[in-house]
Length: 305
Image (tube, rainbow, N blue to C red; front, side, top):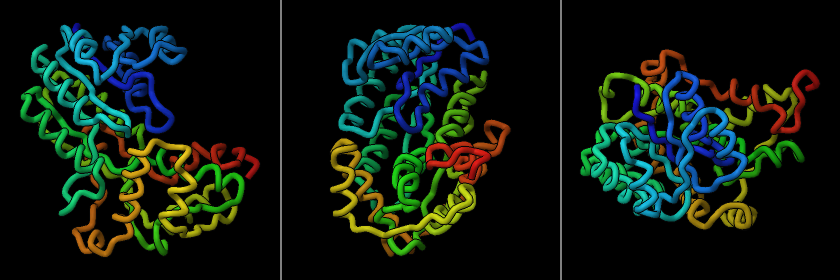
C-alpha cells in the first residue's frame, strides 16, 4: 500500500487511545501513516520517531481537515467525548468525499435501542448516517464502553479504599464492554486489508458482565475483597464534575440510568459477538485478562498481591 492511511486522534488520550494504537499497528506492518494530531508535543514527536507523517490540525477546522486528506484513500475517524461530534463528522465526510477517499473506518457506539441511551449516543447514530450519505465507503465500528473506561472510573477508589462507588444500581445490571486494544486491532485490520470490508457496520461486544461480576472478577484478580457501593446519580455527578467535561458528564449520567432501567432490561439482551476474532484472527481480550495486565492501576504490584 503506497498511499498513507490517515489516522485521526493519533496522539491518543487518557483511556482507549485507539488512534495511537492503530498508528503503531499499521507502522509495524510497514504501512505508511499520516497521523492527525491536535497538538504538537512529546506524543506527536514519538509518532514521528516511529515513522509516521505528523500533521497538526483540528477536526472542526475545514482547511486543516482538507489538507490532511489530500491523497488519502483510507482513513480512521474518531472524536473525543466532547462537544462537536456532528460538526466534525460533517466536515470530515465532506472533505473525504472531495478527496476521493474510498474507505473511512468510523469509531462509533452501539446502536439499536428503541430510544438512544444518551444525547451522545443519538449523535453517533446521526454521524453514521452522515458518513453513509457522503458515500466515502464508511464502515462503522459499534462499540460499547471500553474496559479502559471502567478502569478510569474505579481505579482510584479501589486503590485507596478497596471500593467501587458508582450509580449502577443493585449490582444486577448488565454492562456490555470491549477492550480499546481490540477495537484498535479491528480498525487496523480493516484499514490494512487489500479488500474492502464485507459489511458496513460491525458490533464489537467482548463481554456482558453484571456489575457484581465486574467487581467479583476484579476481587479475584487482585486477591483481595473489593466492595461495590451503589451511590446516587447526584453524588456521582458532584464527585466527577471537576474531572470530566460537561458533555461527557451528561453522556455517562444518562448511560448509567439506561443500564439500570427496566426498559433496557426488557429489550433483547446484547450478546457477545465473535466479530473481532472473525476479522482479526485472534479472539477478544476478556475482562479478567484486562484486569490482570492492569493490576498496578488498582494499587497492586504483580507478584506481591
